[in-house]
Structures are given as structure tokens and as C-alpha cells.
Length: 98
Image 1 (cartoon, helix red, strand yellow):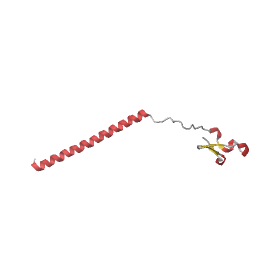
Image 2: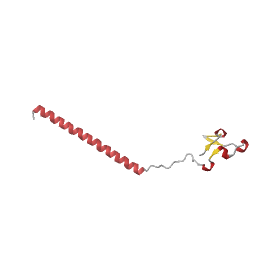
Image 3: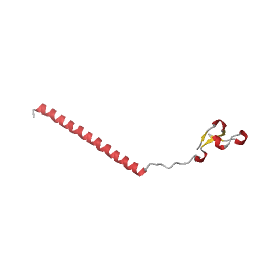
Image 4: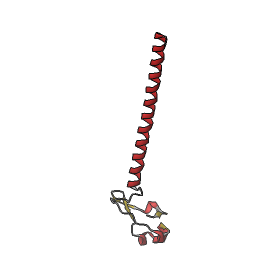
């Protein structure tokens, strides 16, 4: 990958690919057109990248998060059930005087 100083000199080669024309005919050198030619990097198209994600670690985190969610959900359900039982007990106490 490079930075082109004179992009108007590039010729389209199709499929988003560009090429340089004969620079000698136009009176340019390669160094005139390409900035920092010593740092040219090559990209490979249609290639898979290596992932920087540790899949085992992420799955472990997912399982821990799911279990934590289940625990919190059950805690809320049990709290609601307890409040409901206390509420019913108080209603019966009011009715029967106990």
C-alpha cells in the first residue's frame, strides 16, 4: 500500500485496481509519483485475516455472563414470590383477624 503524490497519473485497470503508465514517457520517475517508496506494503486480496480474539476466553466470559444473568433473574423472581406470599398472608390476617 502506498500514497500516490500524483493520483491523476494512475490508469484504471478494472475491479478497483490501478496501475502506473510508462513514467519515462511522461517525464516522471517512480519517486516523483510514489511517496516513501521504501515503505511499500503489499496487501493480499480475498484472504482471511487472523483474528485477535481468543475464542475460548470469550466463550468462558459468555457462559459466566449468562449464569450471572440467570442468577439475578431467579433472585428477582424469588423476591417477587416472597412479597406476594407476605401480601396474601396480610390480606388473610385482615379478613380473619389473626
